[in-house]
Image (cartoon, rainbow, N blue to C red; front, side, top):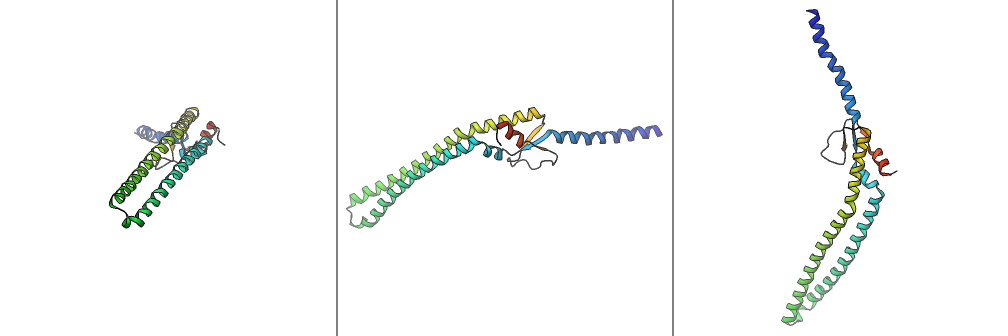
Length: 174
């Protein structure tokens, strides 16, 4: 009977010791990064952001010219509409309508172009970052690497390894 108690106690207590070691090993194999921090630290991201800012400023300048033209014509129309002949008033109203439509079309085209340029400039950087994260994971034997920039990750164990520095080194970022 005593042997059974010792055997059962051993079977219960022994896995508890291994469970602690297993948890420690698992924590050693889990890492985390912040992809937003890494992306912002990439020198190519600064260059791409500057290109997007320049493009955006060019569109803003053109939009300002269009708005000023519209505002001037609208102001003239309001000032002189009572003294205009009916046909002239209708033609000017049509002209204002066309200018509004052109402004709206221009805004749509500008927004689409900026989004396309952003995709063209930023997407290769995201892929390069993704590849570097994968390489760091393989080279360091991590089971997984959590991205803290992803809001769906609610918890990271304090024992996890922060691989951000390793990925920065892989990307050649100081």
